[in-house]
Length: 158
Image 1 (cartoon, one colour):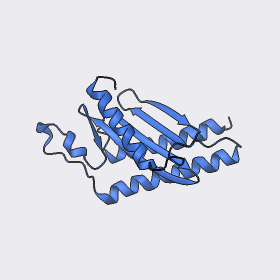
Image 2 (tube, helix red, strand yellow):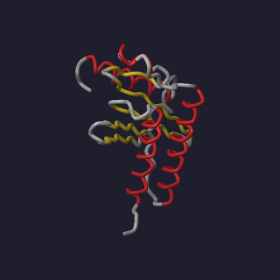
Image 3 (cartoon, one colour):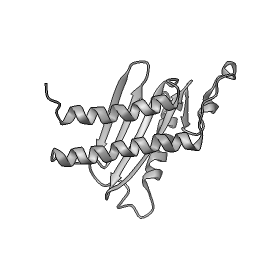
Image 4 (cartoon, one colour):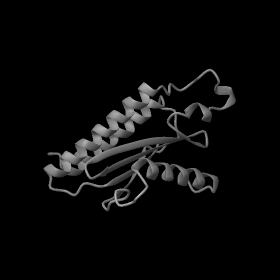
């Protein structure tokens, strides 16, 4: 059976999830990945739900329970950059894939991977999100999503 566009697209998303799962040593409840591609500028971010706490990639150890003091996440800047390089590379591959198959490239992709259920939900947007905004950047949009998820957790909506 020949692979089709959707197969390749899914593999690239799975690769993003895989590198984030590796980053947390397979120890997270949910992984959130933000991808932006506007005006051929790539941006990405990722954060996690661990032990009931929504935490940024550099604050994973804040989510550890007291009895987990022996275990510490490696949140070094080099590891964070490595994950970002892979995610950004996957976004670039998605762009090339969309061109090859004459498909529209999403301007924004939000991935939510529930580890225990092995389920991936994706939300795609095709309109410009931050490029037309006089102030906001892709990082601002990603931070807004982080805050929304955090507030949703507080209100039991995650």
